[in-house]
Amino acid sequence: MATVISHGAAENVTGSCHFLEINNIKMLIDCGMFQGSHEEKNEERFGFNPAEIDYLLLTHAHIDHIGRVPKLVKEGFKGTIVSTSATWDIAYIMLMDAAKIFNEEYRTLYRKKQRVGEEDSLKKPLYDEDDIYDTFQLNHINAIYNEAFVLSDDITLTFKDAGHILGSSFIQIDFQENNLSKSVVFSGDIGNIRRLVIDGLQYGKQTQTLFVESTYGDRVHRDLDASIAEFKEVIKDTIEDDGIVLIPSFALERTQEILVLLKEMFDNKELEHCKVFLDSPLAIKATELYSNYPLFLNEKHKSSASMGENPFLFDALRLTRDIRESMTINDVKKRAIIIAGSGMCTGGRILHHFKHRLWDKNNAVIFVGFQVEGTLGREIIDGTKMINVRGENVMVNAKVHTINGFSAHGDREDLIDWISHFKDLEMIYLIHGECDKMDAFKTTLKERFESIKVHIVKEREHIYI
Image (cartoon, rainbow, N blue to C red; front, side, top):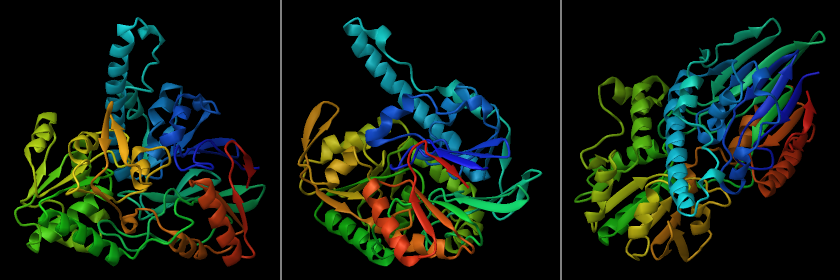
């Protein structure tokens, strides 16, 4: 009987990795990195033999869904990887960035350990650039939205647009087992119908079994138009007070959404005498990739791209790739917007800007993405008044704003609407969510869909479908 075992994103948000075996063919759906309070799990051995996996199916290129792929390869995986072409291209830059961070952290710790003669006790980085090179030498199949392809005589895959980030997918797996036709869908991360940059979420048609994320299963996002209005108001108020706006942002999707909004403000002369910095080499590379995939953009930006206009660039924007260029931002004392990673403030250049700007009450921080428990971003939105940035205590005097309407994840009602379009659905398995949110979502689903069973997946639990 077909078996699913979740080795990540079970009763937590990150580390997505689901093992699926059908008729002796072994697959993984995603192989992501654990983040926040669960990151020590990245060092653990997989709960399966990587060399025995035949196929790795990637839903999208966020690091919590792809971040352990080079580790998987390093430990023996030699199978075929299946994803959309955009996901494959984005995965390369995301993984290279992760390897760079690992290497920098290792060198820093090595120097500290060396001073006390303990360098031999230091663990090597999770993987390096050579492991990523090996990963991208493996056989890769480009999945095309809505085009089913045969994986074996009795298994067919169909990737559909999840409306989450560029190239994101939910995956339907149809198979024959004991002369019965069966189907299972893995949601990946689900977006919503209305998106600022990319095409919106597609609906599924039919499945008996659904594994669905539940990141925001306990809440309804603020209306997008209201979120845009609040975002612009915070920007304008801060700039008018000669302040500086800090935006910790994820390199994928959120940064591109912010850029199209700021471009709109610039075109409407709402950013006069204001400098905008995209201070993230990764986000710059990601934005360039978005420009390379105009057919994945929504109709508004697809149309402008076809006329040769880049929907993300404008005259006030400065792209700071080099660290020396980044340091010169310190000289800007007022009327500026700084977009920098990491989105959850666990590293990256945003920490540098926090150190120099967070203590100033004229400045503002805008969080536009989910903050996992155990991250610095979560601490700040939960109201801490003092943070430690690279060994230095910094007062949080800047105004802190959380605007959830930009979330690339669908909210409770988006998820319910998406689920409702599946015919013949018998069983819903909840993954990719914090425990309290999954509990709340399970209760809601049981009320909305009385005839459908709902179960919260536990890590390494054997589920037969």
